[in-house]
Image (cartoon, rainbow, N blue to C red; front, top):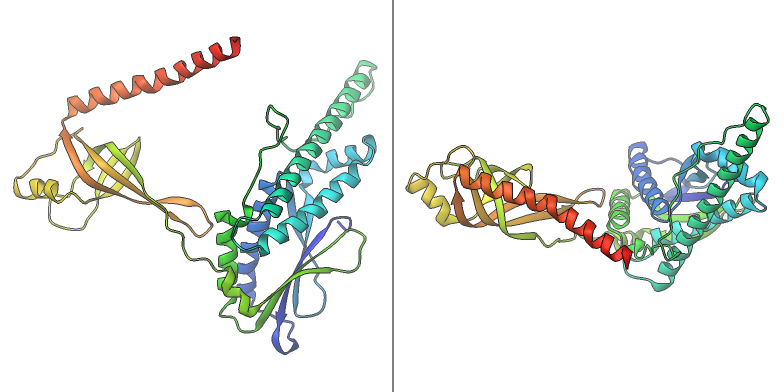
Length: 358
């Protein structure tokens, strides 16, 4: 794939060394690869990264951005049926590499110029996919014509799923990838891994355009700058559910820090009981639970950012129990809720129909 643009990550090493800890390198690769592929996906590109041979000096990794192999047939169609199709695709990939590196090395804050570049790339990727659809349509029509003439048809190649533009014809903007938690977390992990490894004195990022023999250095990050890219764990406000209904599966009937178990919104959860008055009623007054009992309560759903930058549930806390409900009452409430959930989409459908007829 010598016609594909390449990205180089250059690990500068002290004492002119050319070797690096293999386990450390593998972990760093995983973080950077995940971030660059995520950036490409968010910008509307279906690509893979292929590793190629590095060059001398420190330790160099070179990855080539290439269209997903399952779509190479469409790329060929583009090159043969659409004037400049291959050039457009290559140019877009060059811009993608530039944008990906720029986002990766940008401070984790809003940048109007960088956001404008992201929006422009997304718009162009949508246009390219429109060309791919056109190329596939032409190939399909040609196959139908050949079939009608009783010639062996040439079936069109599989293509990537298209990204449809909104109704107004403008692509949805993808602002703030430089502050996106998936990017920021992966970059934090990357530099956290390198910080204690004293052999690495800096990281260089550059790219090579197809047909060019010179790798252009875009940004050099010195070791003393590594700490600037390590972001503290972000605190996320909990989701507060003022009238949560939790069906009790396993209450805690003794004074301990064990978690209660219940069913909330159709899923089994473990939760901390923070209502001391309710706990006292269970422990001191011998409050009994029956099958199907539930509590109406003030529930806090806590979240955290995991190691890949995704927001996940970290735990549940019941702060105030408003009411203990027995089985029949719970069944009635659940039945009412189920009817409401069924009627709500129908009501929305009626609204849509009324809107469309105006």
